[in-house]
Amino acid sequence: MRRWISIAILGGFAAPGLAPSARPAEPPASRAADEGLARLADSYFSQVYFKYSPTAGTEAGFHQYDTQLEDYSRTGVDRQLQALAVFEKKFAAIQPRSLGITAQGDLEMLLGNIRSTRLTLSVIRPWEKNPDTYSSGVAASAFSIMERAFAPPDDRLRALIARERRMPAVFDDARRNLRNPPRIFTEIALEQLPGNIAFFQKDLPAAFVQARDPQVKAEFARANAAVIAALESYRQWLQSDLLPRSHGDFRIGAETFHRKLEYDEMVDMPLPELLKIGYADLRKNQAEFARIARQIDPGKPPGQILQELARDHPAPGQLLQSFRDTFNGLILFIEQRHIVEIPSQVRPILEETPPFMRATTVASMDTPGPFETVAKEAYFNVTLPGPKDSPQAVEERMEEFNRGTIISTSVHEAYPGHYIQFLWTPYAPSTVRKLLGASSNAEGWAHYCEQMMLDEGFGQPGTGARDARDAKMIRLGQLQDALLRDARFVVGIRLHTGRFTFDQAVDFFVREGYQTRESAMTETKRGASDPTYLYYTLGKLEILKLRADLMRKEGPSFSLEKFHDDFLKQGYPPIPIVRRALLGNNSPAL
Image (spheres, one colour):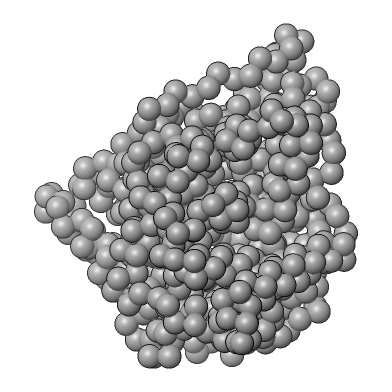
């Protein structure tokens, strides 16, 4: 999973060794309209997007937002909805035919972003239903200041103090806003709160030990203590007051699910048809898993082979190094086989997942905003077993990181998945493409790469595998990850349309997705608040279809490397927009 960062159109960025490509030439008749759209987009991001999401501003590299904090009040929500409505009307008044092809896509993305945000705030309403919005939200805001050394420690500490002084009031807003949340949401918040509190108690002070100004350090100690006290009080309130009256429904329903997919991913297919596509891919991957398992040992059922695969994992203390050890082989293969151009030789840094992401995240890539000019480190986060986990929970967590899934996850998060796609951001054809993105593109690309790399020959003896049997086990790891995403596809739809209970969804991940029960619980918790996480398989299937259509169009001249480079140059738009750019038509994406 990529920790998604939206970025504003206020500057430029180039990865080492690359210069951003020139904006594609548009017909002179459209140039004035394109420039008008860009100016309006600038206004939208300065007057609405970053105004109401200053943490995203920090993450993007715009440090004028570092002292600000999100307004969690109901009044703030209402003001944001009003501002969104104003800009939706302005963008909707623009005639798409007056724009060049790139700007047409940008306009669709801007309208989709506004409509999705309005849907979230007015219909899904996490500010009213999800207690973790507040506790993990303030932790993320502090983490964005701590994470990268974009300024001297004393300067960043001053910014952090300004944010922390606003944080206790956030929990007053939470107590006023939260109304009958789903029990699972309150439980997730309670599960993550000890890590959030420990983050403020230990991680934040440790990160600023090099600060020198004694007055600043004293101010930080006071502000930080107030946040810790507010979090402790919030935890007690959740446990004793809110949890007993948490009887709400996390399901968003078929209509809202359909609208969210349309706004976020430009997919308007009826949900029953989408569900058929998800089940078909699930059955295909299950059949392939069984075929490979028979090749390994025809006398053992696939489930037993899966158990053997699960047991082939490193010790918890060796896990981060195991991921790090995959990089050399992956990079060499990509370069020798001309899979995709790698824009930079700088590698991501392996670290543990931040505490406010642990409950619903196994691994993620956290890249700097493309307008960050100083601290350009990218972090590959991995969720290690917790210190209080039982031996069984530790083993089940580590079974998620078997030999096959370690390679598959490294491909997904780093080479040539999320990290490489981030390095291509300067090539996006417009700054709006650097600003907004679709999960079906970002996660679809990373998930597509898991299969593509093995299809192209990686994971064979000499390229990542110890021997022929090991190569088959690596393929099973890739298929296990594919089945996980297929299960998300089915569970997301069925869970939020009332066809699955929470427990049935957990069982589906175990039975049909070939996951451990520990993983299945994590996945179902995530699905409760991330309903459309079908975008992994959705995007992968869209990219495979786009590749096949382009191969038919180009015939013998088709180049896989050129296809990948051209795909990544588009930024992160919904796949229908990429199809239009690469194929020149509006043919179906699925």
